Image (tube, rainbow, N blue to C red; front, side, top):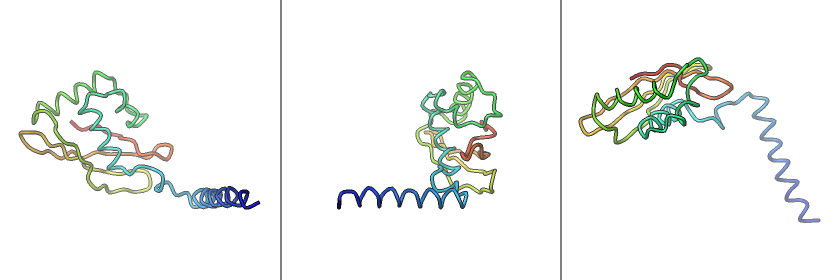
Length: 130
């Protein structure tokens, strides 16, 4: 009988959390923040994983693998091979956010402004910056 109590307590706790999140509409607890999405996107670009970068873009972005490759090349022409990517604090409203991403290379550091929108409760990049 004691063994039955623990699973019931866990299930009850999970149910309470799910109901609380559903009732409040909290979409921030389990969703990566805009600066993390922006950082992840540019890390994927920097490493040439364009297929992994594409899902981080808004559905409105009609971006091909070639255009992501050109973005990568443009970034590296500016300052050399990217050595480090870091997402910086974002400003956000309910459905839009602006994050910054710091790109460090051997010849210097640049900071990109990244615009994001919320789509299906996830932050997605709405405008590419090169």
